[in-house]
Length: 323
Image (tube, rainbow, N blue to C red):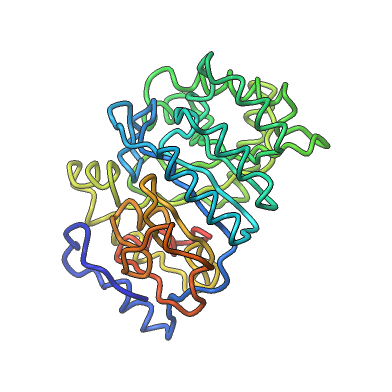
C-alpha cells in the first residue's frame, strides 16, 4: 500500500491503516484490473449528507466530449469486463447518451449509478429506452424504506420522486424476473454508525417495497459511509469524527482485503485523471500515488502496483467490507 498524506485530521489514538494491514501481514496491491469506473462529474440535483464527493446542483464539473473520447479510446484498446458510470448524477451530463453508445460494445457489462430523482426529470426519461437497448445495469441509491430516514439523508420530497422512478423502471422491465434488465439498490446508513447485515437488510427492503408499493428489484448492496467530502464535514460539525473512526477501526475485517474493489478497479475522474477507486478520487489521491491521465495509459495498470490510500480505507474494510 502506498500511503498518502492524511486528508483529514486523524483522531487521537487512531492507528494508521497501513499499520493495521502490517499487523495482519497484509498488503494492498493490484490484481488484474477488470472494472473501469468513470466519474462523469460532480453535478447533481441533490446534496445528500453522506456524499463523499460533495456533489450538488452548484457544481459545474462535468466530463467534456473530448475527455469522453479519450476514455472511449482507452476502452477500445483495453477490454474491461465491467464499465461502471457514476457521478454526481450521470443523467445530468449532456453527452451521456454518446458515452453509453460508444462504451456498450466495448464491455461485457455496462453499469450506471443513478440517484433516481435525476432520471425522473421529464427531459431525461428517454434515457430509460437507451438503457434498455444496451441492457445497462442500473444501480440506484435508495438508503431506506422509511421516509423519515431517507429524507434526512437526501432531502424533503425525495422519497416520493424515488418511488415514482422505481415504478417506471419496473414498468420498463427493470428488476422484473426474466426481463434481463437488472436493477440493484445501494443503501448507506443515515448517521455515524456501521450498516446492518446485508442479507437481512435485503430481505427487509424487498418485503417493504413489495408490501407498501408493489415494487421489485434484484439485489441490495449496503456499505459504510466513507469519512470524506460532505459526510466528513458533517462528522466534524456534529463532533462524531472520533467515535465514527473508532467504530470503523474496531470493525476492521482482514478477510475483506483480498476482495477490495480498488485491487481490480480503475477510476477515471471527470477530467480524465486516474485513481485507484472513487474514494481516492474524492480524497485527491492519484493512481498508486502517481498523477496519470487516461490518455497516457495504453494497458491495464500493472499487477502488483501498490494501491494508494489512507485512513478513509477503514470504511471499506469494516464488517463485510466494500468489495
